[in-house]
Image (cartoon, rainbow, N blue to C red; front, side):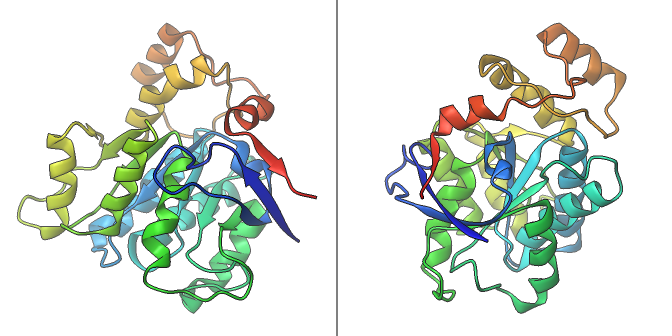
Length: 268
């Protein structure tokens, strides 16, 4: 089933607001706390591996992972999220959202068709393009504002200068959202963009736990809890969560409060 949503604040604070989005899959995936994972289309083995690792651990910790289901880094967060839900008892909750630069009745690249079908079952495909619209080069930078706008933070895995992932971080900054960057080899051009982000104030992270802990105050401010976590988190991380005064052991998810924050309204 394809549904249309009218978002009030998703990407609404950046230069180009979103008037409506089409959704195929689970609407609750758009209301759950999310982290975006983005990077270059020319992903190296390191980028593919780390994208999948971060996504797997974030989903196990109760988060939804948002990315673009395109070639390169954008494929692997979805793979990690689907694998995490398939391997755990948490399959009843959403795990990933794919924001597409074309209509949601199209999959680009075709190699990701099976992955897209899996995402529909455990998350959602999202686009602000009408059905029947195919992929075009100028669609993808613009769709990045939705990737960042649906998320509380954006993680850059690999990004050479000029990468579309850096466009996503610009939108995240416009939206007042946190940017994270994974450091990489200084000899690699794919490290230049993310290292520059770190110099400009992005938070250096080496694990999903770094992101989870950093975003806990935001969740607390929203009065939110997450589903029971499934992932490997260190005793130090759990202790810090206790200090922050927010337990992630609760089995309830107050999706309505994030819904109110983003003001997503189902269009009839």
